[in-house]
Structures are given as C-alpha cells and as structure tokens.
Length: 99
Image 1 (cartoon, one colour):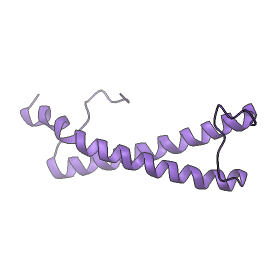
Image 2 (cartoon, one colour):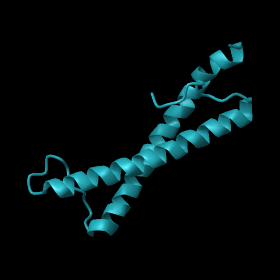
Image 3 (cartoon, helix red, strand yellow):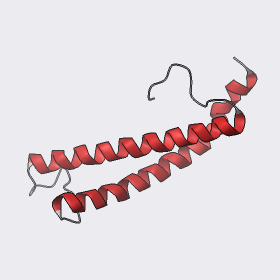
Image 4 (cartoon, helix red, strand yellow):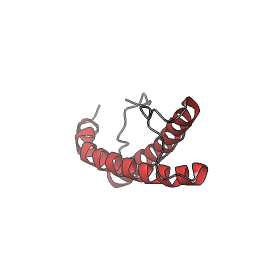
C-alpha cells in the first residue's frame, strides 16, 4: 500500500465528519417535510409516545430510516468522488461495505 493511500483516511476523517453532520441535518429536515405530507402532522410519533399505535410508530421509523440512508449515501458518495478528483485516490478501502 502506498504512503499516499495510508494517509488519505486521516485527511478524509474531517471531511467525512462534516458530510455526516450535514447529511443528518438535511435528512431530518427532509423527514419533517415528508411526514407532514404523509400524515398532515408537524411531529412524527416517537417510540415512547403512549398515544400512538404501533403502525404509526413503525411507519415513521421506516420513512425516517430510508430518508437518512439515502441522504447519507449521497453525501458519502459525493465526498468520496470529490476526494478522488482532488487527490487521485479513492478514500475507502477496497472491501466496501458500511462500517
């Protein structure tokens, strides 16, 4: 493994952190808007909300999870492509998969 390849993950960590924070914020905002369209409510049910049924709680969790995964993957991919364009090295390891 080249020296450049070994040092890249350290360089990518702050970029990855910023992308993760930003994507989480965007995903939260997107979920709020989607939930309002789906259920015409400002607040999604929480798992500990006694007045909500299983269906509502699980639907909210599924929608929120799907939105979060899509936004996170888009942000990660965009960041990796930008690092590759600027350094010539892909920031992930060769095996793939989420950590």
